[in-house]
Image (cartoon, rainbow, N blue to C red):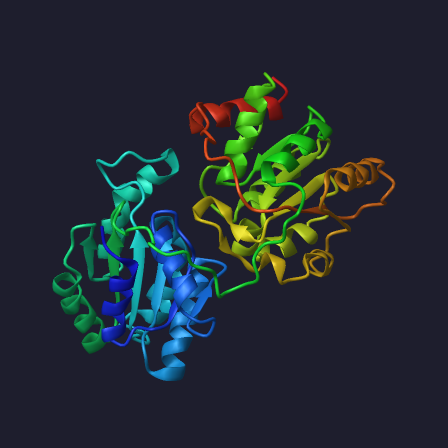
Length: 383
């Protein structure tokens, strides 16, 4: 495997010392090294991949030096617009290095949400006219990267490194994050909060769960309790949970619709909050499980612990905001939410502050995404 330090040292020799990106489990060891080694001035975790490309564009415009943008290949969809309408050689010709984790690579077993993306990743880079190299744990970085980086510098264009699974070695020495203050030690983690929440939500309600460990934990809780899993498990499409739930709420005005969201997901496409807040939907409850980190891909920090979610929600038009950080307060707040005496004109938000971390033996849904979809639709139609 490759040393994250050696990788960054090679990039530094070509003047690449600034990093923007969205953490990825496949790049976890590299992301951990970057977060621990580079100062807050040299590294910023972005809300989404397009945000990171925008930051890298601004970095170049302000310094005449290219930056590194790291992401999972699922994030390529978020960068198509800024890459084609800003960074492309036909427009502003902005050099930058994209470091892309190749989830769902053909021939490599992965989760269903990554299969299609993995199949088309190389074609996407070709269509976008982005030169790239593929690296793995046996690559000679001083042989494979110089030509690509020289092309970036000489032609003033984005280029990419496509990173295969198990490329980067784990860090030998303990590291600590420089970016954001570590998550607080709240009494509940996400699974414990879900164990309290799920029985409180009416069986008739329609629940949409965010991608990552939240959906996995909801599935396991239902299974352990021998309950029918009628929840929609959003295994992909990070950042779109609340939008999916809002779409469900619009066509089911007589049903409570609950979005079980995460702080990283909420931040990724935060404009959806304004659309929800001004939607006039009074049957939509947006629950944000805030552990201040990207827990499903390595625990890298988000801005979830540094922003005022209450002001954001109310300023976006949500009718009410509730917050809790322990089981007792959660039950109290749920009772207040459920009493129905709010004279609502728009959705409600409940922020549940939790500590990060999950069980090491956490499983994955055994039903397929197609099966989950059909069960949810039948529940929505009361079939």
